[in-house]
Length: 266
Image (cartoon, rainbow, N blue to C red; front, side, top):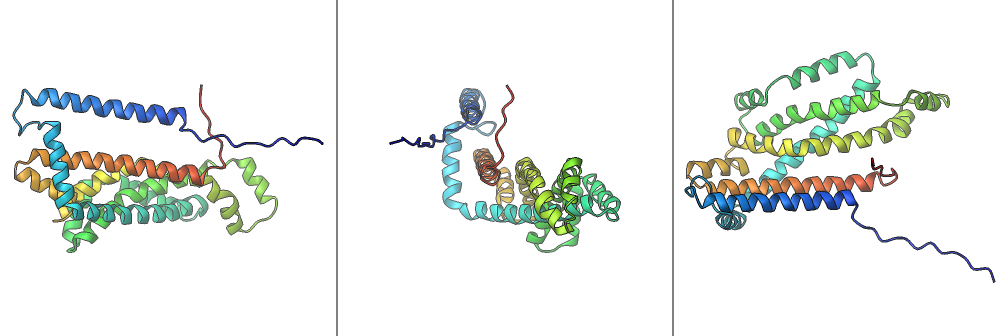
């Protein structure tokens, strides 16, 4: 009887690059904590607190100000998701509708030249509600990143592949569905990973200027009451938040693009 070969799937392991990144992150954190511990012994507490006091402050804010973290996360999620969807639509229109391209591109380029502080001050004058202010600020700042990325992705479509698809006389929707959308998905994830850290900084800055709730306002309160340990604790939490969101987006990207083979440059 002829034996049949059975393929046994290999165990999934963390890629070498992923393990190296994780190890490097841990090493950097340990070095920062060690430097804080050494330097804090030579300067007053109001200049640089010890890692232990920062840990105690972190536990304090997690038990007393959890709602503020959720408020900031909610604002961040709503603004980033809306900016991503709107940016994809604007970028796709720029890349596929020749009549609108120069006008939309001009608007986006002008928007990118306006400082974030200007948008914050304008939002304070224009809107009374703090939620609307923060949503407006984050949207006008983040939307151009997605729009320009999607536009560049469409411009990078291989011409021979486009000619091949058009030889079947597809409709515009079929071109978008079978060619354009699969091609721009990596650009969406690339932009999302690039703007997460920037979006976190902007939402905290916006809360500092235009709101009385959220992490930004609590950091301002800690500064006014000379609680530098709380300032470091909030900063520590924001770093953890950024790392967690980056890891989540990377995992989602791997699942969405699992059909694409990974390439490592040797």
